[in-house]
Image 1 (spheres, rainbow, N blue to C red):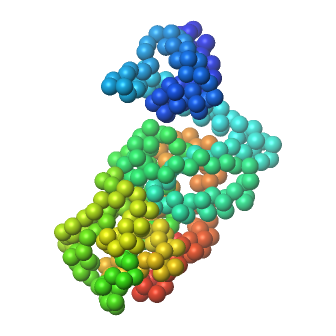
Image 2 (cartoon, rainbow, N blue to C red):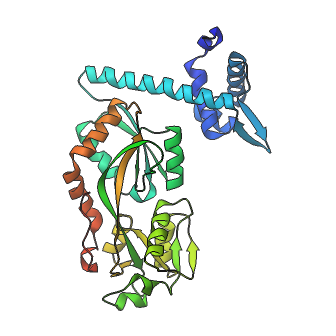
Image 3 (cartoon, helix red, strand yellow):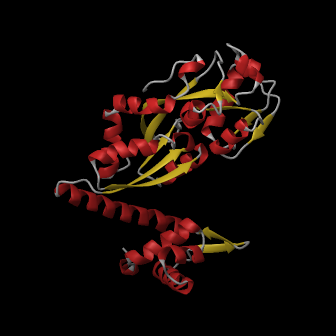
Length: 324
């Protein structure tokens, strides 16, 4: 091993990771409570230690060099092992402590805080770092092993992943209460196609699943409007801009308060399952392993927990989804 590498400090690696995350020296300085010159100095010292540049500036944007990519991966391993050590030491003292780094697809973000709260009742000294992503971002984070665990619906089949489903995620059609389709007792998916359909961005897993399902059912919408988030879709439907295919969990409050109506479409709900996912062979921290074990062993309780997200479904003519 190069002797220069042994002179690296944890503080330098923390600053380096902050720059990589923010792609900005000034934002990294703000995050680390340092001045920008201090951040620049630490990065220069790191570059001297590895004898290679870490960042390139192109059109005023910061890009990681191959050396930076390698150093970032190594730093993740180092801090991951330290975090695991901290948790193991806490475990030896009789309590589980540490942070769970969890990424969830946007359709699951309404349930996961309640899920973690139930877990934290058993392990009150565990904290949570939660990031909400779309499907494409989730796949990239899996490739980079950015998180302890991910919760997603469509698990890639070509990435060597360990996963298990734990709860159904029913996709339903929703409309504003005054929409003409709300007066009908039974609909086919094709009956919806003469109205505009509100869809998510191309990287959304819900959009991809719905497009594939509609194609399978030969339901082709003549007009679609792209909306950037689930919340925006809900507001756009309520405003009368079109229909949407959304997770029933995501619109539970709007259904229960009568702001939206679930349409009685025979081919719906489209049933998918949320899954807990991590890279095959990934060394899970004690906290991540405990959370994974909690979900696996508490599926029945999680199904009961999810019932509160089914408000408004009983009167739609569709059976609510249970646990997977």
